[in-house]
Image (tube, rainbow, N blue to C red; front, side):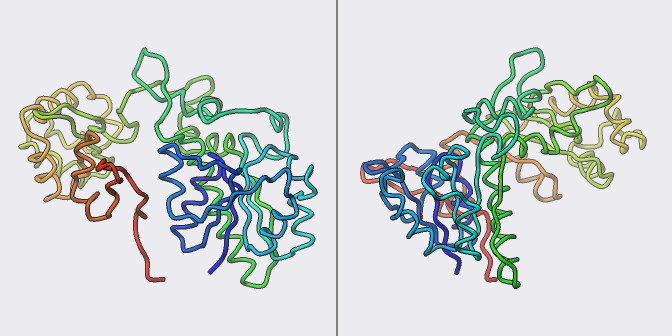
Length: 333
């Protein structure tokens, strides 16, 4: 089992959590008296061992911890570790099997290297905020610090690849993760360009590759439909809503043709969904394998059978329900 040392910060927390779920032992180093006890950090740091250490006063203690690790994850400002004599390139020279993952807003090199930024700034600069929100209204950010989560996902995958390469006979490596570049490279950002000077605009919850493909109001709340471009999915959708004559033209099975009739399809769907409950909609859609899910309130989420199955909720000493991390899937390999 690989051992990972995480110099704890909001940038590194999601990466460390994913590696913990992948089977690594993860020790997080925090300043003395600090626990990063906010709910977001509690969620991503659950299950990690915590070590209190002043990096800037005890660099040799940190060096000893690094020496005992296979992997180092760090989110300090570019150049700060070098000030302690712990430059990642130098560490790998001294410990050739070491893998270092550096996560920062804009990477270790380049014109923005020294810029400071929080998740909101990176999310905006990365282009995703341009398509987030309701049409004609200001853009919005996504929940759960998505810039850091995206960067952490890239960092975790790169770390595992580097560790596997090392085990196959290679050496360690230094992985430079720029949260900004991770967002810029997202499919949602790249496919937002329709042509020179032409960008897709905000469409609320409406997805660009499915129709119907948004959140609809039903009798007792909301549901999310995602009827994709595949013709069999469209046929099952028509069967599900009773094969309305207005939508039975075979040409509508093709997604681009479907988009030219957006208002008709959307209004018929909204009217049909609006007469039914969330449970009725979800259960009948599941029977014919349609991607339709309820939009849960926080209370609904806590009581959801899948949440309970994953044991994702715990009761704190004061009797309050709270989330704890649960892996999306488990593997015997």
